[in-house]
Image (cartoon, rainbow, N blue to C red; front, side, top):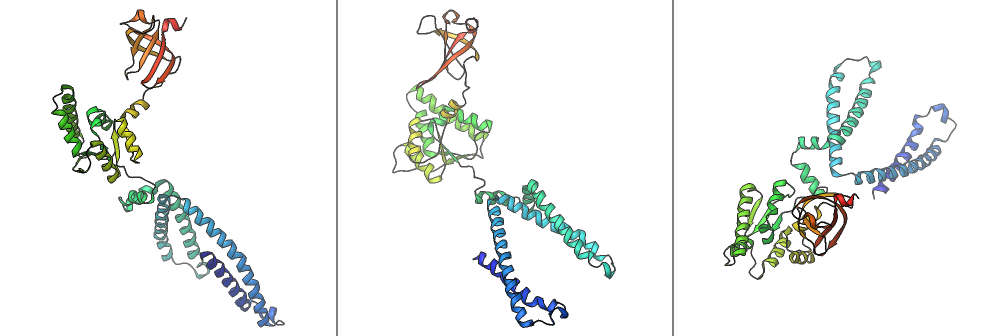
Amino acid sequence: MIDAIIIFAFILAGAGTGFHGIDFLPTEAIAHVNVQNFRWITLGIGAFVGLIAGLIGQNTYRRIESNIRELPLETILGRAVGLVFGLLVANLMLAPLFLIPIPEDFAFIKPLMAILVSIIFAYSGMTLSDTHGRALLRLINPNNVESSLIADGTLRTVTAKVLDTSTVIDGRIQTLMETGFLEGQLLIPHFVIQELQTIADSSNDQKRVRGRRGLDILNNMRDQFGDRITIHPADYDDIQTVDAKLVRLAQELSCTLITNDYNLNKVANLQQVEVLNINDLAQALRPTYLPGDSLELKVLKEGKEASQGIGYLEDGTMVVIEEGREYVGKQVIVIVTSALQTSAGRMIFARHEAIATV
């Protein structure tokens, strides 16, 4: 529809210019011409020129529209604010100019200067907005920039995280929060706290220690990050297991579930719940050792094969040292020869530095 309006406007303007343009011609030039017929001829020529100009204008409009659609909302808002600021400054600077008396012969200078200065400052404002656009938007409304970008999809809000029992007992979640790698609110469901209390009251010594450790970690996290830790009162009487309740809560609140439980991880993924597994994170952050890299470790025990020694890295990775039995109990430097990834974890094979350099 807009294309037809643009083309029709140009045709109408061209036809009107051609029809009434004869009035501006010298009388001698049209003295021997039938003026009425000549008007219709110039009208047709003007309409044809207007059609061509309209097609060009319509294509130009579409290109500009396409470029604007590809621009982020932040850039469009920033340039608009820059344009307004530029024109405002231009008008403030031009105000004294219009108060200066100028001879009538040079009266054209005022409107000419107004046009030039407005164009220069408008362009400068839009250019500066490309680098300082967000600062300009914050100056007008500090809270509107982020909300506009979130509504546009340029920014995403940080989702809350739901913690399960295994994550709390594990304790590494507290370290992640201290390092600042974990963002957003952490929700501790009331039924998870109940499960921790049940474990802490268990007659089994190991379970009791684990339950109390989990409760202590929760208390420490409340003390350190009180504004980010929320005890959620939700419970589901129709669901028996804690894992199923966690998945339901994460679905209802559109939260991310944090767990160390392999089976819960799989079940949540099947139900399209986003999951963060701390064990997967720890596995991904393990350093990668290539053949030729050197390691310093203590040989703790003998290996299964003759003359082998066994040591461990800080992350628990087993290192099998060929010809390392004689170094049991000693701190040695070894050279990596190969690495093997098994279902139980990663295993590194190495040789003593003195043997590897032979």
